[in-house]
Length: 76
Image (tube, rainbow, N blue to C red; front, top):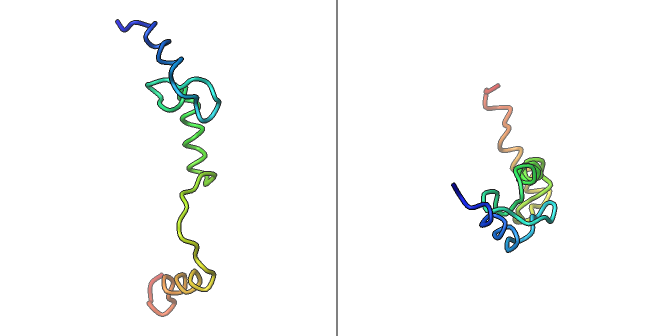
């Protein structure tokens, strides 16, 4: 059986949870709990977090959309 004191020692030296600020736990790294890990995942899935990329201008976006949807191709 693992020594529970070792978990407590790891909690004190762990960086804070990025969601709530409590000490992180090794099994949920870098979070402190499943709840905080799920909250972070939810922020990614709803678009609150984004990875930066090149900025597209409006003309390029509309040209790309026009190429993808071609009414003359006989599909759909």
